[in-house]
Length: 261
Image (cartoon, rainbow, N blue to C red; front, side):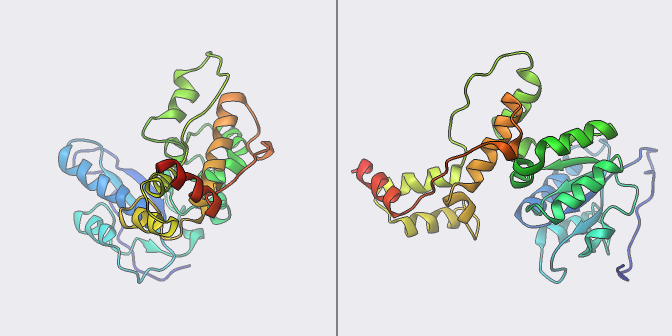
């Protein structure tokens, strides 16, 4: 257990409204952007139900995180809320777990623990959902809580919501489209004349690609999304789907470059 002193927010605000208590796992680009959105919401809608981020799980507490520092200054995150022990994240009376650490180990433990405790979960972890999606959804139904993952697949459309609710009762016969924007951008730049390395560097500089773009370039990201869509649209167990995958290699880049000329 951590010995870091913590500031605990009141259970009820001065207006008599109980804050929504959130546990945030991960505070990188995604987690930090979420904290910024919480701050903007508080400024634009001062009478809305307040959001209190009670715990923030990070790998390295000493790393500078401007969005987190600003959230603390705004009173959205209490001083001393930063922890690096995953077992402490869900100790309090948490309403929602936002999982933004990725992977299928610690993330799976946190999500399963939250669902078993009746805590709503929000995640965009396509790798975890592609491996355990149906089992996690079954667990959520058993405990009567929501498992939300709109951001896992083409969140801007939003396809997950449509398939889960809007298209209920409508027969889906085919799913096709661009599932990975990073690889699509890279191929476009190669077609315009850039080398593969130059195209990847451009995507990283513009924020379209992660520092490690491996899962985008080798097709793993698209495969995970395809597994989720097959599960939602056709009831296929995600882990059982047989997928033939080919990433962007020198041959693919040469093909894209030739088409651009």
